[in-house]
Image (cartoon, rainbow over the protein chains, first blue to last red):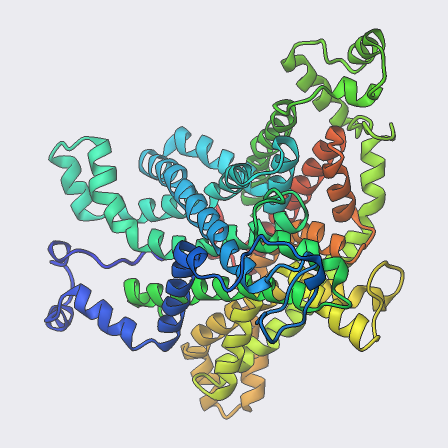
Length: 304
Length: 306
């Protein structure tokens, strides 16, 4: 994923062979959009992600039933009439619960990846740009965090801090930022010897300006691709934590918690665990497909 | 080579120290008083104070850390808050069952991922290739506990072919190993495919073909050997992920390994156990990665981690 090759802005192209210039009769953006449109799996990914965003943001207004209304007489209705995906032990409509659960998945996925970015980009930039002892120190910290299996560190943090979505976000941010830092650092290392960076340095630009205005924009393609696929990671992890009862609190309708509730009735009501899990899978698939497609588009040389 | 190994080993030392600091601070920032937890709800303040003194909780944090580290070097990770048993031996006893599961999941993921990846690369852009790519993507996208639940539903409840929980026989291992190995199977399929595609385009493969060697021999004797190098590098990382995954999968199947045990003690906030667990998992991960790096250094002398 971390390719050192990047679409260099037009002014950085002077050393490229002539045929590349001929191909650049269209702008990079037009070219990228054209490539994206020719990629059917990326389009499917985009559609899934859009649907997910739409349901997460507006789904609460058109759920077929009240996702929180309990009616024990309605318990475990099979999928079909009235309840497309069946009902759970409390007689609540599973489709409505999945729709409302999308909110928390989106919230966790996006917030966690933003936090990874905030920490990981700064650490990666500083480590890669300055090198030396500072880099060694920062990268050993990164190595140490990566040494813990992610889900266990997250579970331990949850056990210590208690249930709740804010704690889930905190725990998953702590667990995931080092990977982002590693990625950004390797990008920075490959970019900082480029001529235009050397030029910026010899012009006397200060380090922060070089890092944030010259190196970072050229690493964005990789960061965007990783972040897109990365959203899938906290979504699966949140489902896992909530499934184990160390994630969301019971009043927050999440996919993972729904599965942990319905697990004991699986023998008689298979739909209780099947559909929320399917929702997780489809959303994760969507982000993976979109991420793959973006990589092909933003990083054309990476393809095969 | 010796210098490389030595350098790599020296790098591990600060990482281990940082791992212990992270583990220690995580638990010491926790709310709640471990002395009260050990003494129980209805202990008198004097009893709690005695236990606090005995546990060394009145000493400065730095000293507590050093004491804990000192114990660790001797293989003493303290005693459980729940039942007073020694942490180290309790955990180590449960490790073999988990290692069995992790190994079985590797057999699943390599046994599925490598052949499908090869097929996919050799038949690039055919139906088989599309199938393999969809398979890999689905494998990566399914939560492991959900795979486990579906397997249990189908093979235990509906078909009644496999036991739903427990351990002790090969049949008990099948479903947890598949649940734990599915995502790695997807990753290994993708990696084998891309690495094979790259190798198959190289000159020595073309030479082998033009010498008139059989296609199968070229693929298995020439290409595969080279294509497996990147796969080896992910095995270390994947092992760490499997150890983590074992917590969830073992809980689904009530499999008596260290993962399920860790989960139960996490719920009980048995802090010394949690610390011991984090530490053992991290040390295993560091050790395996060190080994894969060294192995990689031997197999591919051109690229050495520095």
